[in-house]
Amino acid sequence: MAQTGVRIVAAGHYAPAAILTNEDLEKVLDTSDQWITSRTGMKRRHVSSADEATSDLALAAARRALANASLKPSDIDCFIVATVTPDYVFPATACIVAAKLGAKDTAAFDIEIACSGFIYGLTVASSLVRSGIFRRVMLIGAETLSKLVNRNDRGTAILFGDGAGAVILEASAADSFLSSELGSDGSRPEILRVPAGGSRKPLTPSAWDAGEQYIYMEGREVFKFAVTKMIAVTDSALRKANLTHADVDWLIPHQANKRIIDSAAKYLGMSNDKVIVNIHEYGNTSAASIPIALSEALASGKIQPGNVIVFVGFGGGLSWGAVTWRWVA
Ligand code: ACO
Image (cartoon, rainbow, N blue to C red; front, side, top):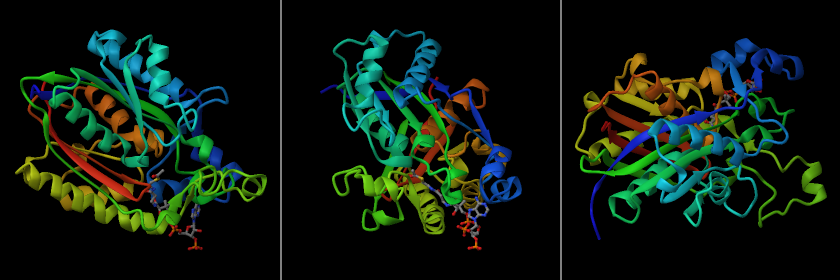
């Protein structure tokens, strides 16, 4: 089988028009703009409407990425959607997106590994291209987490937002992919999960009444795990690529909490202007947060050929991962 390099040719992102601000949350919950800003860095989140599903957000981001790459849907050999909020339990959201784009008979599948979805997806998509199986793969991180949030739980209602980011990966003589490190620990699913709606606990009326259709999170536990793992997995990925902290031009982390991002950046010795942060605008959009941040960084011209980027994420599973990437124009 042919062996080749891979590069990202373009990205695009989309977020619903409706905005939920900290001031809006103050009116309905026992919380404050001051608490939310100082504990999370969040100011606003974009929220999908009742008739907007994850595939609609993914589709809008996909169209923007295709336009930015001057490509047609038929130029893509495989669509991958990383999401924890699919349109349905099945079929896969990626199949729906491919069909809506008019990409007939094209390979499509979803990845469900919560906020680590884009990192796992980037690893899989890169492998599919580098192995020669597909020439072009579109990877989309898309979420409508606002639909999974209990609006009465101040511990989670303030955190999550909706959005989608898409990247197109393509075979290339110069290789962007330097390394990937992935991990998981499923021994404590109870600290971050949606308790009901799966085969362990179907969504019965009593589960519904208990609010078990919503995200449950032990925030403090997840916070500790996130800081430790973000640092450890970044170091492992850098070691695999024979790179040091000093080689990193850009850190593009999952946007879950500004304090988590700041501790990772401090450990890596990276100044704030080298870390892509947009958490104030979107909140935590799970698998969509990294591709939205990348798309914005590309649009603003921050990322230049030759730059070394660390993409790093963590989330439900528990799961974590980092990819090191050299930008190829
Ligand atoms: N407004 C005001 N007070 C609040 C709020 C709020 N929205 N939420 C919690 N508090 C209170 C608590 O009740 C607690 O009060 P107490 O001391 O009287 O008991 C106090 O604030 C401190 O609570 P903590 O939970 O310790 O607050 P913390 O500083 O840890 O911040 C947060 C909470 C923001 C949730 C943080 O723990 C966090 O970001 N955790 C990680 C979340 C994350 O990264 N999730 C990732 C993945 S999501 C996925 O995979 C789908």
